[in-house]
Image 1: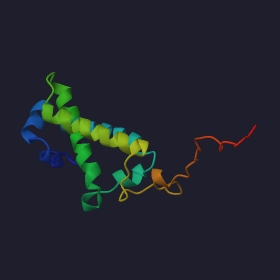
Image 2: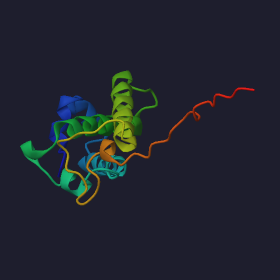
Image 3: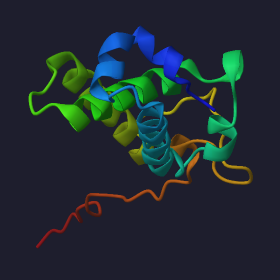
Image 4: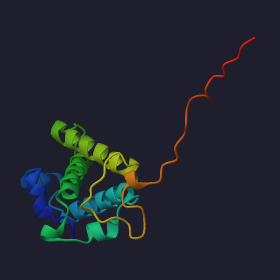
Length: 142
């Protein structure tokens, strides 16, 4: 699996996760799977998501891993509490903003595998230039 439950300890205390999920590890695995699916929907426009999320260990992209953890922790907190954990909320908002920028092409990660046979970067797309302005004025004399 791309992300294990033990790796969540870098963004939240394991005891809190166990308390929130009532020691049901299946809940955390389900939240991880849902979060990967969410990230895949954003990344699939320019990147090979199967290749990204099938990697394990040191082969994983650390930026994607970081934002995935933030999304998972936010979803775990939201499952149990009505109060919003401000740190988790802030990291979740940053992660979603990052994913939106990747999806729209405002940001590009060159170390992620792109879709085979597709445009590798949103910046490499052929641009259609639109010329604004008017023709040169004519000089007339009467």
